[in-house]
Every structure is written in structure tokens, then in C-alpha cells.
Image (cartoon, rainbow, N blue to C red; front, side, top):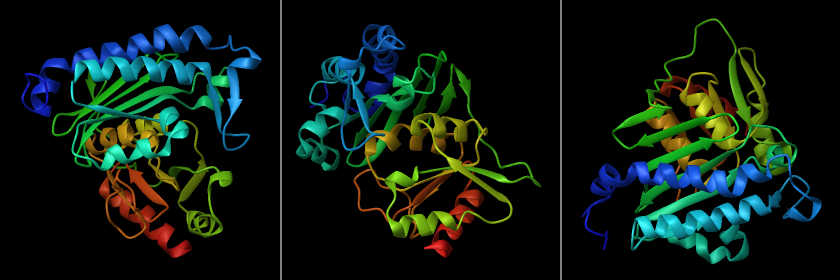
Length: 281
């Protein structure tokens, strides 16, 4: 049961600003004091040398888990670090309870290296449908939000990605080769054609924001972890963009997607990138 707001729409109408404040407070308390101040013992390796976790990730996720559950009683949290500790936690995305999908520090590698290309990602979903998202890049002072049917905004200004300018190469941010199978590598090679300029991605959340702003034309990613994609996918959708998997269906946060998939600033571009990925498969 959702408190006294009755519906997710009612909750968002009344408490969306409180969610934004919680995200800002988590970053102020647990992330920014550690930026460029990390000690060696505060950084660990998870699955490989590019998959890092820090005390900032862990503590910010705990902060958000407690705060977001309190804001929306009856909700659950699926956070990257909690799922790493207990993979069964991820199943809540497929349930009926409202679920907060949290990546406390997206772009941990950049964060560890002292770069400003990291962000905190929070999305609210129910029944596999994304309802709202919050993307905060604290080192850049940028805060983006999206509400299904209510548009996407960056620092209060409406985002409209629009179509790419004619006559120039499409800029496409792609998965790091270390995180792709041989089959996915072949699909991504389909982007190496005249008129397309693929490049390795940075923080997924910030790449999605760049697409929503019309600063990047598309992304092409080969993994499904919802905490990396949920916030950004809704941001791109509400800015007028589209996303498609290899089979031409929209990406599902509940999983089972044909990979790689693309999200682009408009549907025409999404279909073009999807076609190139399918041709390269």
C-alpha cells in the first residue's frame, strides 16, 4: 500500500522534490567528501580491474535505501551493491511493489581517478514500467529529472533531444570491449561504417543525459543491469528519443533483452543504429 498518496502519480506529485533532495543529500554526505580524497583501503575490485567499488558507493547506497523506503512505504530498493552481495535482490524489479533502482556512483572508475564524469542514478518503477528518474552529477552541478508523460528536465529546463543535424557523422557511445561477448563485438563492429563515429562510453548515466540533451546521437550497450540504464532510458524517452533492442523491441528493465541495444535522440536514429547492429551480428 502506498502511504496516503494513493498512486505513484500522487506520490510523485507530492514527493518528487523530496526524492531529489535525498539524492543531493546522499551525494553531499557520502560521495563528494571522498572525491579525490579516497584512501587505498576505500577502493575494492569486484569482477575485474575495471569493475571497482568504493566506500562512497556502499555508504551512499545505504543512505538512499533508508531514505527512499521511508519516503514511499511499501517500496523496495534494488541497488547495485546490494545485488552484488545478494543477487536474488534483483528479482524485486519483476515484482508488483514500487521499486527504487539505484546506482549510487555510476562511473566509479572515473570517480576513483578523480574525474568529474560520474553521477548518482535513481529510478522509480512498478510492474516493469519506469515512472520517474533522477540523474545527479554532483561534481558538475547538474541535476536531470524525468517523469513518464511529464517530460525530461535538466536543472529545471525542458530537454528536447531533436534529430541529429544532417550531413555529419552520428556520434555513438558504445560498450567497453571488456564487457562484450564475441557475438556482441561483431554486432558493434556494424557501427564502423561511413557516417557513424563510435567511441567508448564513459558513465552510462551521463551518456544517456548527453543523448537527451542532443549532445550525443546514440548509445549502443551490451549489458542489462537496470541500475545503469533505468534512469537514462526514461530521460531519453521523455526528451523525445527512443530505444530498441537487437530484435527491434524496446528495452525491458525486467531483462531478457536481445543485445546489444541502442537508445537514440530520435526514433529514426534508433532504427538506423539498430539496423547496423543487426547487420554486424
